[in-house]
Length: 112
Image (tube, rainbow, N blue to C red; front, side, top):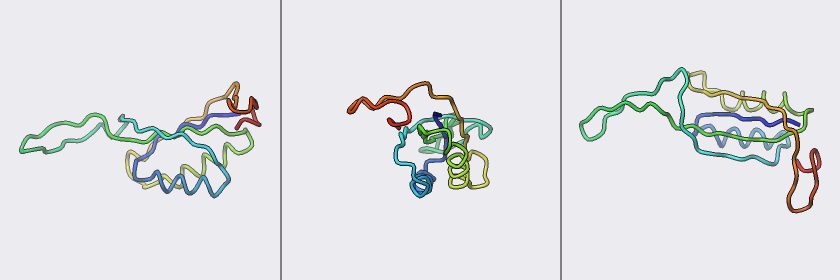
């Protein structure tokens, strides 16, 4: 089992959600986060004052999957989140040691 963490641009969330639903992924956790990478933030003008925005709004997706769908899911997220511009995001894949569905007590692959 693996955990897929993807950091994407907020306006791409619906595209990614639809794309992963089409390949049969049913569960996803979404968090609004802030951060920066190579984008390094940007300058904004507010009420005549210029200020630096260091942390940009992003969306973090967390998806637990069985090993056999990992590459397909990564490819799907990458394709759906792509704009070709700096700040498109990153995808991280981690090993998942255990999963438990609280309601039923199912574990590991059955819990996902």
